[in-house]
Image (cartoon, rainbow, N blue to C red; front, side):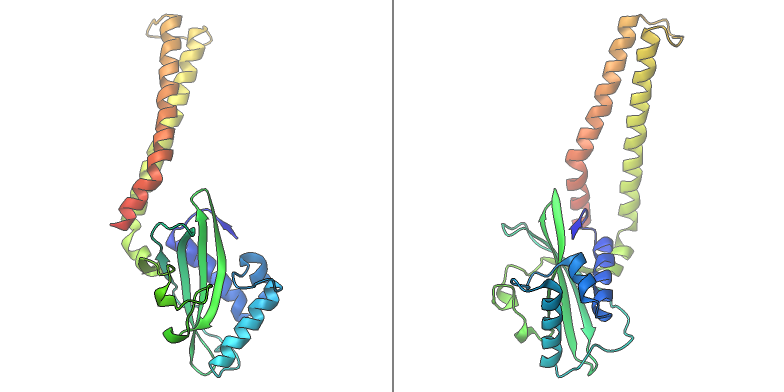
Length: 236
């Protein structure tokens, strides 16, 4: 599925949705929403069900543990790479014999177009985990550089979130104010509204242009610097 953000809380919500489909054995909905990276030409829903059943069999289990609560996911972010790997969302679930298995979703693409896909369902034992190319997971580029839980993000980042919300609101107010001022100057220059300062039409027109330029520049600066600045603060 296409996503618009790599924020941990958002990835956690989407990951929980995928786990909900899996725990209900709703493979069709899971496939329709998230696809499956390891389908390899098979029908997507059938491939998920087949691999899920195989993993449970390898664990000596018949099904997932009934009525279990969806756990907190582990969320990791990758270093820049040519494979387009962005983030990994991992859940550890229990089978009915108390054995653990993993469900992983992976975010791929680029900042302009990102996707979240069901990556694999696997035995949680490290020696049995492989990437999509068959390499042991500990030897793969797929190791994320930073792993956090959504609860940790919720505890650690509220101040940063409020800061950026305040900054964004200030920018919006400034842009609206610039547009309003430019419009007022434009109509004052044409005599539609009264100008108490006694400025000439040329001066009012010039002021309108400067206000429009300032508003446009603030939008450009936010678009160019807002995401890198937020990422830099998030990494600290």
